[in-house]
Length: 127
Image (cartoon, rainbow, N blue to C red; front, side):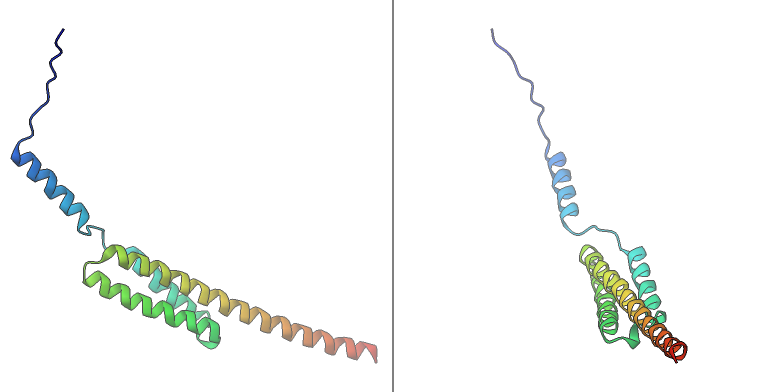
């Protein structure tokens, strides 16, 4: 009993088309991360408005975020969109951290002020 297998032959044009598709997929092809870039820039502005420049730790992360955004813009210009997205993600994280550090510093200052006022009231009542 002989079983005959039917294997289709692949033409040269089909092979060339497949190789071209693989080449395109390997050569970047990632979309420009414009939405992520815009969001990171907005987070930097939010951190600035939130007082990040007045706190040394927050200011450092704000500076890092700004530098990373500039690096991402250069990567986008060089069509390195996937790497740009990674850099933008780091910028977003640094901007968010800058804002959180600024808010923490403000909350600590307000708490210290409230403790001072409470101590003054206690001393007045105790006399």
